[in-house]
Image (cartoon, rainbow, N blue to C red):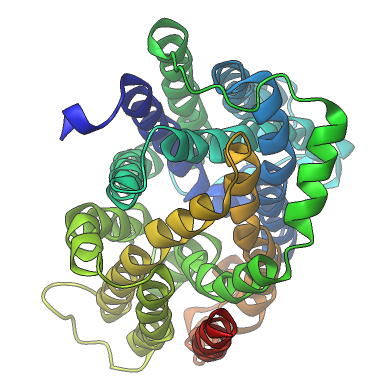
Length: 453
């Protein structure tokens, strides 16, 4: 297999693994970090996370075009430099605020006492740090997937993106494994220390790129800003691609709840003994095991056909997640019913992802002219801009309404009444998934008919 792909392909995929490892270690508990360490409410944490995630997926279109101009190697070095400083800042800043007396950690491993931070303007000092991570991550999203496009041919491109997606999920799985041990042993301080771990991973990736990444594929390097603008205008006015992005956003709205809703939901419904990091790890594990098989199984089918299969699975995953609060309190295979149904639902999402994501990237790579791979692959990530922008904000409101913070209630009985309909959260995403699946079926039929005219 290695003889079919270049050294640049393998180096890019290896550092992608490290970047995903760093990102998911932080991202899986981002809303918890914002609420438990910085004192933001559910809605505020959801909105901040949503804007951060949306920006992370909006910027690749623009930085991808710029990466085509300055070259992929320079772009990757820039990206990992920004990411290293960003994650380091997320770890250092709360420590400095603690030293200034603005954050005081309680004696209990699960309790945080705030002194001043909730009403202090210093809360917003986190914003420029998150902007660094946003810009660095945007470069990675356009350049690594763009490298796969440049370093593969029409014959092995589907296989190349399958390997790329497998590496992404190895990184995601590994990153999430460090979360629960730190959180359970160190409480909210563990959420802070995660950022130092992520900074170390991106620094390692930076060293690897400087030492090993070199590619002869430099199409587009040195283009004028006028040429960049022309390319941006062309791709941003491609109605067919924009419609497909909007439709696939429905999938990502549901999949993103693994980060927006699930951590708080399972901890509040099960207790502090819940392990959201491990539940979330079911996703990359299943993708790692299944993605190459699914790609091979669907290789004779079009990218749109493969995506449609995944879109029909995704609303069912949200429906299964809702069952956890409705099947009673008896444990299933030693697991709390909320945890068991969450794991099954996440596994179903992973299967859907195997059908959708690699073929979606392949589809966009085939639309990209030579020298514009960064632009087009960056543009492909707009689906997550739309989905994360709305999904995280919606999650905050749904959590406050149906699964609020137990610290706001004086008794367990009062809280049980407040969370009686917590599963309604997942019904909302079932509806979003079904509408998206229907829209993709219609899209496939219309585009097929248009191609035949």
